[in-house]
Image (cartoon, rainbow, N blue to C red; front, side, top):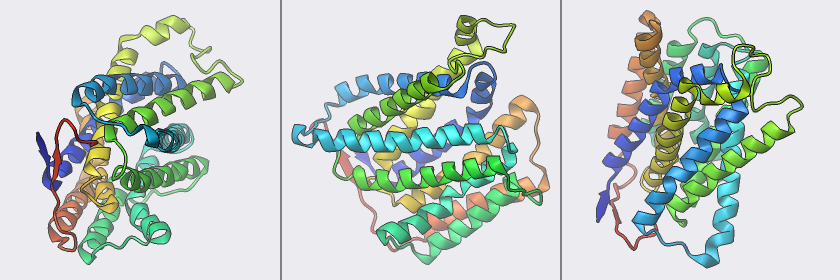
Length: 317
C-alpha cells in the first residue's frame, strides 16, 4: 500500500523538472547526430516499453468497457506531446535557446488562463502571485532585454500552448482513467506519430544524409545517441509523464505548471557544469523569482483542502 500526498506529488514533479533540465545537454548533443523525428520516435518507444513492467507489477486494473475512451484520450494527449516536442525542437533552428526557454515557459501562465477560459477553473490570489513571479523569473533567466519575435518564436509558442493544454487535459483524464495504462498509450502514440512524420518527410529523416563522417547505422549507434535515448526515454519521458499523471490526481493544473517552471534553472545548472555557461546577475534574479513563486503558490494557497490518495494493488491508479 502506498500513500500519495500533495507534498510527495510536489517532489515527484520537482524531480521531473530536474531530470528535464539536466538532460538538456545530452539531448542537444544527440540531436546534432540524428534527426528530431528519429530521436523522438526511439525515445518515446523506449519510454512506453519501460512502463509495461510497472503496469504489470502494479496490477493496475483497466475497465474494458472504458478501453475505447482511454485509447482515444491517450492518442489525443500523445498528439499534443508530439506537436509540442517537434515545434520546440524545430523552432530552435530559427530562434535562440533563451527565446525558446522563455516562450516554452509561457505554459505556466497559459495553464491558468486557458483553464479559466475553457474549463472555468479559478486560482487563489497566492497562485496568481506565484505565477506572476515565475513568469518574471523566466523572462529574467532566459531572455532579459534581448527579446525578438521571429519564425522560430512562433513555432515554440505553439509548443507552449500544447504543453498547457496537455497539463489541463491530463488533469481531467487521470481522475477517471488508469494512470499507467494511459501513460503507455500516449507515449506509444508519440513514437508512432514521430515515425510516421519521419517516413512522410521528403528527405530521409531517419538519418542525416549530409553527415559524411558517420553512416546512418553509425549515427544510430553512437554512444551519445543511445545514452540520450535511454536516459531521456526512461527518466525524462516514462518516469516524467507517469509522475505528472499520478501527481495531477492531487495537484491542480496551475500548480503543476508552476513547478515545471523550475526546469530552466536545472537546465542552466547542467549547461554551467558541462558547457561552462554562466547565469549572470539577471539569471540569478530570475532563478530566485521562480523559486519564490513556487513557494508562494505552494504554501499560500489555502483554497484547496489537501488530499491523500491510497494506492493499493487493486486500485486503478
